[in-house]
Amino acid sequence: MNIRFLPEPPAYLADEPALMFGALVDGRRIDCTISAEALEEHFGAASSREDDLQCAFEINRAVIEGAAEQLLTSVGCTPVLLRSGYFRFSGGGTPAGTWKQAHSAKERLSTSEANLRERDAQGAK
Image (cartoon, rainbow, N blue to C red):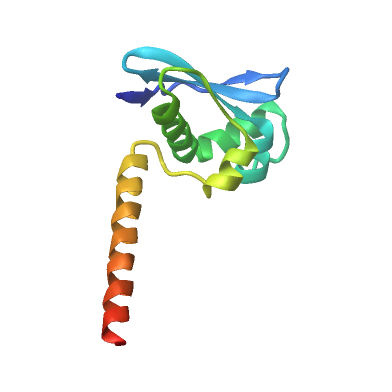
């Protein structure tokens, strides 16, 4: 799956409030949305006003797009909505383009830790 985020500024959705940004997934445009609550609680937006949300989004764009990339990888070509709970329970997020590398590194680290524990257990006998 080829995922690329559009460099345009996100659109403010006053009814939500939220910001919507675009991704191209295998050449097809998919809308991604992040709630104002997520931007306030996890990315330092001062309020749910448009300019505060836009500022927080731009400062944290790589991590927000990384979270969207992770969800798009899981759900495919369907719109995604990033809420505060996603960041609370996922541990934050990873910059776009690095989720797969970070996931692989985490798996390698877990395997290494398991090997060390096994070695230590054998040495204690």
